[in-house]
Every structure is written in structure tokens, then in C-alpha cells.
Length: 443
Picture 1 (cartoon, helix red, strand yellow):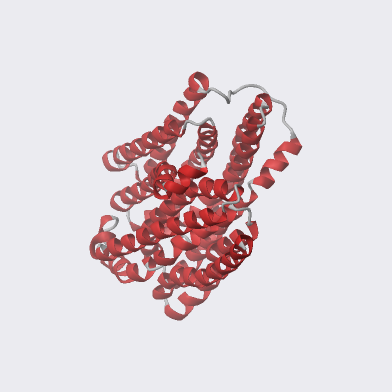
Picture 2: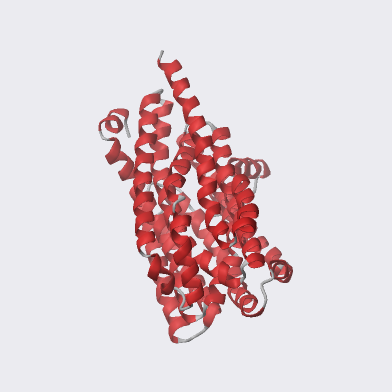
């Protein structure tokens, strides 16, 4: 990577760094959508609702895993850059051990709050039964998911992202095959779909362990002495990722809480189906953000502030047009999109009527997301945190608890676009300050 190459070929460099991350993120989204497809077609609307009711649990695992892993891989990378290979290996081993211990402990805690959670959400009857069937098994799968993700970060840190991408592709393919086998052929229902995720994750783990046994050039599994100061430092380094995931989990919990009380299971099912498209688009934005961030950081660190800003503007342009394309595609498909997942006229009508409102958030969401990445990449954690908390928690929660009370299910669809529009105003204020600071620096 060098400045001249970035300056001459901004578009090419952004795509070069972003495309692998985008593919990986979209594959992650594909697994979720595939599970939803099989759940809706072979279990029913209550199965989709049950999975969505438990998504805050998934975000909790993701938050804990990212907090441990991102902080650990950053510290291992810095040690490696300083030529301290043994210290880097020590950090790798401790991070993996901490991820395993934390995720297993979390599963034990989750087992104790199953019934209170279902009572609080009023998940009764079929939805409650499917919730139990699915998440009893997922409490085994989620720790494997966390460990796989942690290992993957260190595989990328070794400079071998292609191998982990292949593992991700394998995981997605096996997940679909097992979903069809267990839910479609053997009619094992919600538990079968969870078992499919578990087996696919375990197969991926075996491929990862083989990599560290045979192919790893830097990081190796082995004994280590646990260091509390290193653990605390790595947790602090990754705390912003934990906050981000927990914000998403709390928002999803609030959505489910309000929808179950205002509309019921049909509303949760309709929102979940529409949310698959939003999830896919958010993964696209994350992929672009992960790709552009190292380029922006490199340019900014070299005091090429205009170049860093140009990279941010170009990436924002990409995600804006991507958002417009997804909005048009989802709006055009709204008439039959819901029927892909469930054969229920009421739910299909909800999805069709709300799709254009809900997906209009994509026009603003990409710009807000990439700008948050930009401020993180340039060391402005405060601005990044304000944008993230606005769109992921504070403004969103206000919208979730007020708009459905005023407009019913239409208010549910309105919450995301109103949140992103309000956040865009905050984003533009920060960018205006950034432009003024840039002018002062150049002067």
C-alpha cells in the first residue's frame, strides 16, 4: 500500500479492499436469510417469529466475542509489528481461550433466563415452543460461532483472508444443505434448522483447526500463561464493538417487545421478513466500511487529509447508489417477496405495504454507516460513537416506542427511516466541522 497508488486509483483500491469483506458479510447474511426461508416454509410463521424474538441473544454473543477478539487481534498485531513474535503468539492463545470461556459461560447464563425471557416477551403457544426448540441447540452453536470468528480474525492477521473466505463459503453451503435435509426431508422443524447451523459451524471449526495445525506461519496453538492486565486492555480496546452489538440487540428487543404487544406474532413475522433485506444491506455497508477504513487511516496518518476525505466521499457515493438499487429492487419485489417465506395473506400484505417505507432508510443508512467508519479510522471516536448510538440506540428507541403507538404497524416501518434521517442531520453537522478543520489545516 502506498499513497501514490491510492491517489491514482481510488476506486480500484476501495474495491480491492472492500470486495472480499463484502462477500464475507453477504454470506453471513445469506445464512440468516436461508434459515428464515426454511423456517417459514417448513415450520411456519411462528418459527420465524420465534427466531427473531431470540436475536438479542445472538447479538449478545457477537458483542462479547468481538470485544474479546478485536481487542486481542489488535494487540497481537501491534506486538507482531514490533518484532515481538512470541508476545504476539501469547496474545493469540489468550484471546482464543478467553473467547471459548466467555461464550460457554454465557450459554450457562442464558439457560437460566429462558422462561423469564419468554414470559416478558409474551411468547406463548407455538412461538414459545419453537423458541425453546431452536435456542436450546443454538446455545451450543453460538460459542462455536464466536470461536470461529475469533480464529478468522487471526487468519486475516496472518495475511491469508482468502482461506477464511473459503471457510465462510463452506459454512454457508453446508448450512443450506443441512437445512434442507433436516427441515425439508426429515421434518425436524425448528430444532433441525438449529442443528444444521451447529453442524455447519463445527465443520468450519475443523477446517480452521487444520489451518493452525498445518498452514499457519505466525500464530500457533499451544500453552500460555493467562495475563489479567493484557485481558483487561484487550477488552477495553474492543469495547466500542461490544457497545455497537449491544445497541443492536437492545433495539431488536425493543422492536419485539412493542410489536408483540401492539400487533402480535404476525407483526413480528412480517418485520423479520422485511428485515432480511435490511440485514443484507447493512452487511454490504459494513463490507465497504471495513475495506475503506485501512485506506483512510493510511492516508490520514500520512497527513493526506484531502485524500482521506476523498476516499470517504467516494465510498459514500457507492453505498448511496447501492442503497437506491436495493430500495428499487425490494420495492418492485414487495408483492411476492413475503410469499417466499410464508404462505399467509395477512403477513404478505403487511410486508407489501411496509416495504417501501422501511427500505427508504437505505438512502441515509449507508452514508451514516460509512461516515461512522471514517471517524473511527481517523481517530475521532466521539463523533463515531455519537453517530452509532443515535442510529443504533438513542433515536431508534425513541422512534420504536412512539411511532407504533401513534401509527400502529406503519409506525414500526417508519422507525428505521426516521432514525436514519435524524442521524443524517447529526452526520452532516460533523462533516461540516470536518470540512472547516480541513480548510484550516490546508491554510
